[in-house]
Image (cartoon, rainbow, N blue to C red):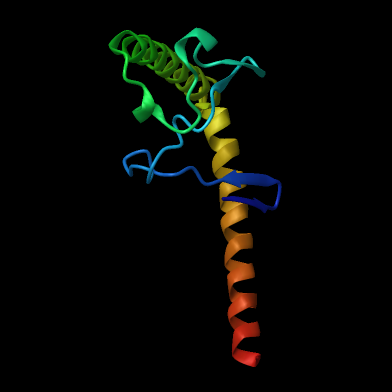
Length: 122
């Protein structure tokens, strides 16, 4: 969910502690890597867009598992890098962010009040 309030674009990130329902892990045989789609599994492994349950060869499953672990490691490294890049690093940054958030909260409260008033009239 994203909201624009004053000069802020606020992206609400899902709680990481809450498991998503069923992940769409094997819905595609392609994975994005550096904005380019590359095969998740080589054609020799019998790409299966309908789910991994169809693979019966242990070597294929082991290879797929290794690829998934490698992909997960890359995602976790990207998450760490993103966290480092977007964290507050100075007192001045913290103060500026606090000022923007204070202004945004005031705007949200105003919009909430207007919506409540409009609801009472309608």
